[in-house]
Image (cartoon, rainbow, N blue to C red; front, side, top):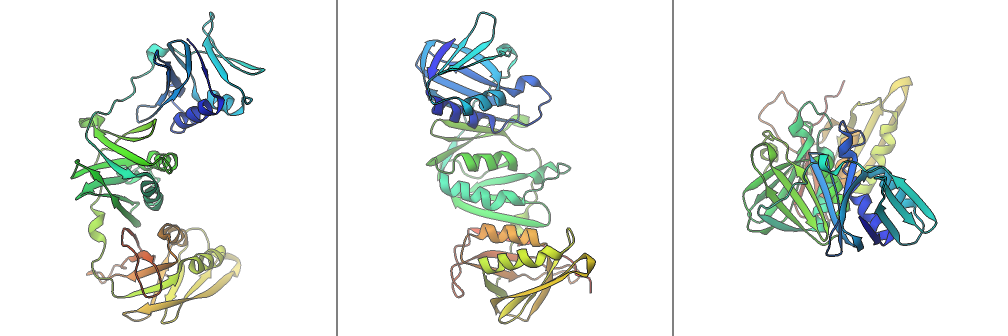
Length: 381
């Protein structure tokens, strides 16, 4: 095999396919990047670890078609540091792969192509979502997924298509994040539980890639989902299991709430939380004209700060919240003001969660396509 390719184009393609490779792989063969040089002048690069795959096709001058498998992260490190000149890659008689770019020359060990698993092909029905909206939705939701592998279903983000709307939901039991966007496609009433780690990379990669095609394929234990934009495709094996029906937790009535400047509350929470011991809740008191934060930590450290707010529909409220969880919600609101709603519960012995949504001004609510439920913490008297 032998081909010539633009340095920047090749470097970007390698960087894309290796992003989803795990840092430590129990099977060395899966650390490789598969490079296929076709007779039509196209160069395909792929990576696969049995759970997720990435594939892209770029233009190249193909002198001798063929297929090679080389260590992905090493190739990425080399490609990103090559001088600004065309790259020539070829196989040598000793089985090594030669990478030549200007005065730089590398010899890489070739891995056995025949041992590499087949890259998944997606043939199922698909729909289309705007790339920027989908990327924003992922960023607003994926952080709420659990990082504890003890309960695998909570480490994913549930994608559900209903009535030309795609919803993304994530929870770690203590909070729930929900975002909806438009869906254009014939595929309806379908659900897919996608690993949050993979979805986050999809969001970063396709943020500015125009429309994204999402396809569902497979059955049984090999159900997969594919995201395609331009010349790039990412597939992911779906998480098996029943995702908890958390959408029913969002309340219908939202009459008792406070509206506060998102940036002002964010900065105040960051300051006051500095004295808190790890995982300790921050005390919030929502009053008619302000919200006050109080914290007490070790070494008798204390902090307090108030921020202007407007309370509507009820009495003052005092509760404890995980400051980091609230900060992540405020970062996801993406509006000048945030509405914090105090929900009610039929269980008098259980604290009711707060609902965080966007607010365009003190008086006017924003679109309800993003919602975030956060369970309060018990406060010590």
